[in-house]
Image (spheres, chains in turn blue, red):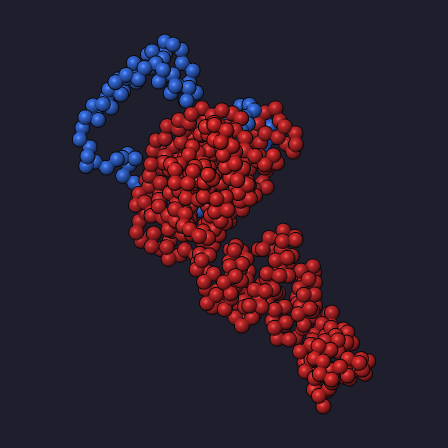
Length: 95
Length: 477
C-alpha cells in the first residue's frame, strides 16, 4: 500500500507543516512502511478483541467540581506571539 | 405542488457546572475581563493533563435521562483536529464514535422528535473582530470560554415546519432548565443552535441540506428556516440545484448568506484522546443520578393541576420556565393551596406584566414570593379589595416594602364592619333617591350606581359584596 506524495502533502497541510519536495519524498516512503506494518496487523483475526481506546486499564478518572486557585494570566499571555491588553492578538479571521 | 421543509437541529448547551470540563477554571466568565479564567490546561500548555469534571458528567447523564436517551455503557473522548485561533490546543476534545448517549426523544405539540445522539465536548474561546461598531484590522482572542463544558444534542430530521423547530427548542430548553442541567441563557451563550434545512416534494427522498449558523434566538431560528426554505424553493423552481453548504443568518437583512470563507472540506482526523481514560456509566452511579433528577416540566404541570386544581392552561403558563414555576410554587406554599388559583392569576397578570416591562430577573425581583403571597392572602380573605391589592403590589414592587406595612400606611384595609358600612349606605341612598327608587321598583341594575356611591364615600375601602347585600336589605325593608 502506498500513500503517495499527494496524500502526504495534504496531511502536512492539515498539520500546518511546510515540507520541501525532498522531505515529501522521504516521508512518503517512511509513511508507506508504517502502513505496511499496519497491514501486518490487519492480517490478524481481531474478531473477539475489543477495540482499545486507551493503553491503561483505567476508567472514570474524575475530579470534583471545585474551582482551583487562579493562575497568573500574565504568565500564560506572555507565551502569545502578540497581544493587546488582556487579549491575544491574531491575524484577521472572520466568518 | 407544494414543498415540504425538513429540519434537524443541533443544540449546544452549557452544563451548569462551577468549573470547566477538564480544569478548575471558573465558568462564570460572562461580563468578566478577557482571559481572566484561563490556566495551563485550558490554554493547552505543553505537559499538562486534563482531568474530567465529575459534575459535568453527572449533568450530561441527567440530560440524557431527561431526554429519554440510552446511556452508553462506555464512552470515549476524541480529538477533533483543526486550526482556528479560538482553539488553543489545535484540537477540540469531543466525543465521536462512542458518545455517551443515543436514541432519545422529545415531545412537541403534535409529535415526538427523535434525538439522534448527545455527546460531551469543550467549548472554544471567543473571537473579537470589532470594538463597538469599529471593525478591527486584526482579531482578538479571549479564552475564558475555552474548555467550558457543553453537550451537543443532535435531533433527527423530524421537524417539518419552522413552528415545530421553535416548539422543539422551547420544550428542550424547559427540560434542560427544569432538570437543573443548564440555565440555558442564550445571551450568555449557554444555549446555541444550528439548523439543518432542506426541502422536498412530500414523500420524495430528502433534498440537499444546508446548515445555518449564527442563530442567536429561537425567533431567529424560526425566521431563518422560513427564509431558507423559500430560498431553496426559488433555486429549485428556477431549474437550479441546492448546494450543500453552511450559511449564516443575517438578522438585519432577514436572509441567509453563504459563509464568506469558503471552508476547505473538513477533515478533522478524529482519534481517541490519549490523555483521557474511557468513561463507564456504572449502574449504581446511574441509578443514583436517575433518582436525583429533578421534576421535569410535563410532570410538574400535571402536579400543579392535580395538587393545586389549576386549569390545563394556567398550569402550562406556570410551568413555561423553571424560575417562574419555582416562584409560583413558593407563593402557593406560603399562601396555601386554596389560594393557588388566585396566586396563578396574580402571577400571570400584575406580576408578569412588571417582569416583562422591566425585563426583570425572576431570581431577583423586588416582590419576593413571600410578599406576593401576602398580597394574595389579604385579597382572598377580604382584608383588602382586589383594586387595593393591585396598588399594594405596585407600591411593593417600587419600594420593596412589606405589603402589610403598605396597607396600613395607605389606609387600604377593607371595611367589613356592618355598622360603619350602614352609615355609608344611608348616605348613598339619601344622595341618590332616583336610583334607590328604581331598585325598589325592581330595577336590579340600578344597584350598581348605589354601590359605586358607597365606594366613593368610603374611598374604595368598603367591602363591595357586603355593601351590595346591605343595600338590598335596606331597600327591601
